[in-house]
Image 1 (cartoon, one colour):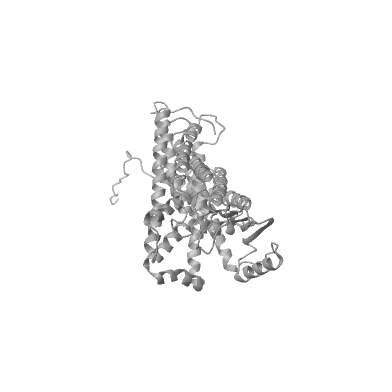
Image 2 (cartoon, rainbow, N blue to C red; image 1 turned 60 degrees about the horizontal axis):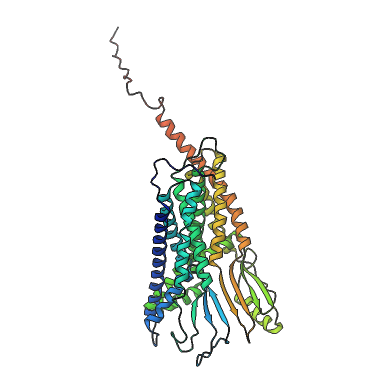
Length: 469
């Protein structure tokens, strides 16, 4: 893409006004996400029973949850823990990263809206709008990084023996910066799609085609996640023991049950992403290191399926040898391959959306729009997989070997498989979408042609009946 000239007569804001708008949206987004985290924390607090910490200290966990939405790790500092039974060695740190992605999607949506507002007020061509929209990431990161120094929980504040807890300060700046820049840039690009027209003879991608590809790629990811999670829900009757164990939390009361359902909803995109990546062929991996021993296992794929027997055998072999044992998992059941329908339907529908919104008038144009949507889909899958990957890192300075564990979709495999599925399926959907669009336009054209519709000035041909000879 190239920059288009600014629209004539546009109402372009100055740099100071653009920054004020960006700061306002950044603050509003951070406060909204923080309120969501506090509400979920209050739900847990209300569901608890027995001895509980003060609500003021407990509500600090809501801030941690807001940071978790951005893939920001929570640090537990090692300290002597009198009476706790489990203590971290002095000088040790535990970093835990787990992002409930529904909160991430909320933050990204608000930041994209903010970026669109900033870019619309600034005006300009496509690249200028993308850059203006991306500026929302800087104030968002500054706010998140600054607040991270004020929300730590001191030792013994929650319970006797709890170590000091705080967000990872570097991550609290860098991850909100990355999310803000990407979401804001997407919003800025969205504002350019409706305000730009291609110059005559230009060889760049037309703005409408680019906007259609972006919309198609977003549809691919969103529909793929929805269908994957729906498949998980439909499997519940087939696994009565797991379903009974999950619903058993309601036996402890309505509050704990509602809290469990609420947090399940928050991590629903995470679960759906694991299924979607595996359904496309990528491995769900668990990798890491214990001391100097490294390990990497493919837990779920077309050739591997987790089982309790394999997990027990793995633990026994590891304890016996002290090395990372080989993990031999059985193949998945036949029912697992039904999940392939989720990415298949998602990429085809996304291709149809890309062709129609991109204004494709030929099958080749539709295939191009759908394939470009597949490229966008692959990029979105990589970003989602990076954010949704869970991680724990024990950095010990004395007494304990280092432990690092990461669990999530394999990033390289996810990107390659998503690209293959997106380009192939999106291209097919683009062709189908263009064909249906052409048939509809042909039908509309036939209904409005002069042969099919009488001329408004045409007179009916009345003839008197002839009398008898």
